[in-house]
Image (cartoon, rainbow, N blue to C red; front, side):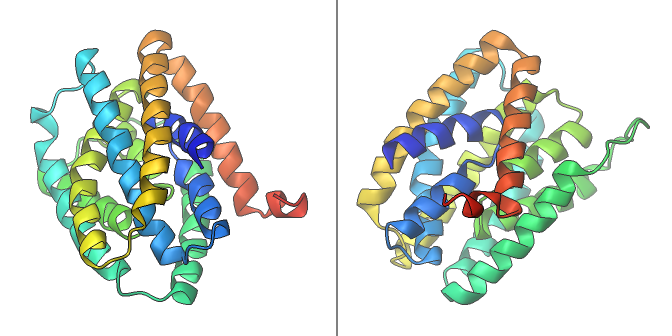
Length: 241
């Protein structure tokens, strides 16, 4: 579990999709999917605290310009978390599978060559409210959605987008953990073991991003998306993984 946490923290910090590895491990350990989803948030929180600190030290994170989208994402995440604590395992699994297909389509869609127009602030808030709603509800794969939104809507490069993403996810995960903990959905021992691994992975991820730049982040993003796609199509299951 610690080892998977290291890999997930590294992937989440540079791209996304780390929870696609963590959730099956937690479910394999006997946790119902809603409990696995909640327990994973402990690791996500500490992972992003580590990443935010490292990005800030490296001068890659400026908070003031993103406060409006951060607040929007936090509000969405609180509502998503409240919905997630009241859902049964069977329905959650079906929703998770459907959302993963949508993420796959989003990641694989061809990129438009036309320059994106700057959206008005109210529409940016609506977009990131929706991303936060999803992140509060499921979390798995939200990194891909954040990177797409920050790269296309806010025009950040991938290193900057990852720094902003970690700050927003950290901000809303604080509230998500409170909601899930209050509902008694978190198994703390599992969550803290994962958190140690995720935090180490995040530290390594930020160090690699700052040192190697956007080309390295693109490579990791390609690998992360490829792994996610293999999981989406059930190819891991065919070889017994």
